[in-house]
Length: 124
Image (tube, rainbow, N blue to C red; front, side, top):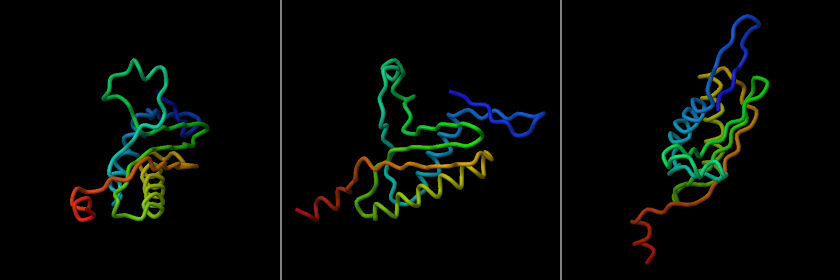
């Protein structure tokens, strides 16, 4: 799960995809309204991976650029579209600034809305 990203003809920089995944998780969790992450794809290989090693972030690096997909749950108090757009921008900015890898696309999938227990009691 590692990709080598060439920076110059004589030098190379190796950045593992799991490092980029961690940057994405930290960046997205800092956005107001994001309540958690959801793993969207389950493959046959996932059956043999420990529960703590599943990632809700998918990173594909090719030709020095990255395409990122992540699944999140959002708060019932936020505007879903605005939150998703903020996640896209924050992830793109943080990955590019920390790694130097150009981010061509950030796909954000909203899998659920989380309501606080206080909201549920007020609605009854």
